[in-house]
Length: 376
Image (cartoon, rainbow, N blue to C red; front, side):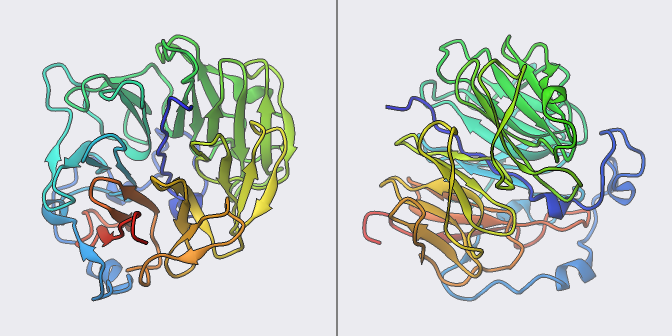
């Protein structure tokens, strides 16, 4: 039985605009820099979004609506698998949690000595063997990876791996010492730590020359890792695998894997492919096949009964045959620019979220759709 649960949600690369250089690049989002006064939403940007449906989708942005932020205001969201807790990142303002299904939100990281999270959250990793432990990764604005050991009361920045699209952890090791962090929209940039995040080494330089952005890592064990290379940049896309801790990499698929993969409870790996569809492996990433169609996209998630869910072209879709076929599970999505999908077992509901490049959290940033996995 697998002893870890990973729920990881990434900002789609296409949503992040043009090329990045470094996190300190003065040209990045100058109009949305930290320290900007709180203000009203950009009306033009709000009008550009599709009006949320009046069907079963419910707006649960609550007290986060209008909070001063920047481009990518609400880019990372997760439903904690072992408790009734929703967690969302608000750029510049850290992590916020809800214990009532999105009716209200309260700040995390308020404990004494907690490091402030100011980045744009891009992924979460939850440790199923230690309920109070999880990791956050994000881009821009300070450190890229944080860890909490007290369920979000305090966070501690991990080393100098900045500007990261995702973090992955070796759950085969009880000490959780090996981590990988993928650099945001950067080729051959994949940070590895063998001391829990205190120090990092860029093993991405060992990827073949000319590969695309190495943003999406997956640690299988201390020495076996995968990385998805893809994005708007030039270069070879595909899935690469190492069995020596990143010293050497071999391409195992030409699928342009995007976002963080799902490792399901049966060990199957599902990885979203740019342009739609899913790459699937049943042998720890050695071989891959393609399932689904162009309408399936975004980071896949696993429902409590083992079915796989993902964003579809117009609704959340669910597969009961390991991704071969997908059926709509919800009414039409409330907007066409959803960043991702999460499912709360305790709330028995799906959640989707989105953002724009204005300076505040959108009024409809987080939407909920009730879905009882036991009866649907």
